[in-house]
Length: 67
Image 1 (tube, helix red, strand yellow):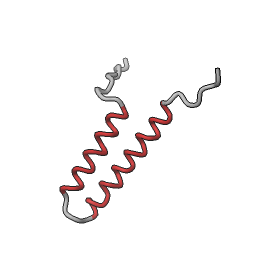
Image 2: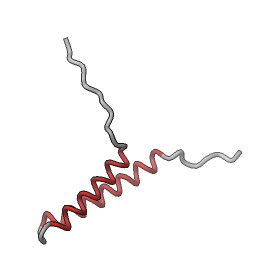
Image 3: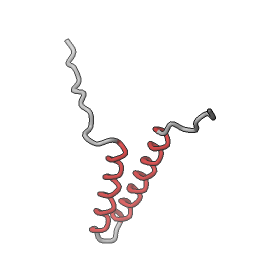
């Protein structure tokens, strides 16, 4: 017999989770001393912003036909 997967919805939307990720990454980067880790966190924040923008574009209704 197979076990059923627990299917719960995330508390926050994808857009909200991506925004929180970018804010957390920027805050963590500002607290670190100069180095490789501090350099990669802003890149990850930009990746999160890009992902949020793509998600927003994909979830928009797009161009509407003239009525």
